[in-house]
Length: 145
Image (cartoon, rainbow, N blue to C red; front, side, top):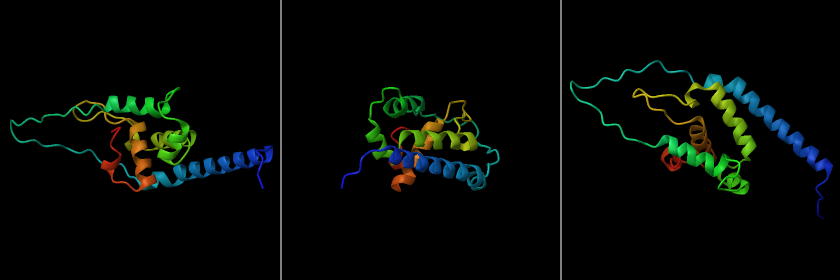
């Protein structure tokens, strides 16, 4: 028996999406603040007269590649590829990312001690969600980092 795409199935899908949105809101509002505690400031000591050589990691370029590949108006990869890679649809990913970045200072883009911009919230959330989705180690998701 074939199922037709009817208004009842659309309303079921909308109800299901609404339930998922409510669950995400509840998790982020009630559980996320208790998960991470802010760290105190760290001091970096250096030996007398020794300077550090800073490696240019091209973080901005990684952010631009990630955005153009998946989040631009005309992305390089299709919606189907996005869903396969992140195991969710793009609007759900964006909703989760926005809530996490809004509520967790670690996921926000900041400058490091040398004054260089760190990873963007998009890069951090992409890496975290892919690690959770696939059970990967951090170095397995560093293509945009």
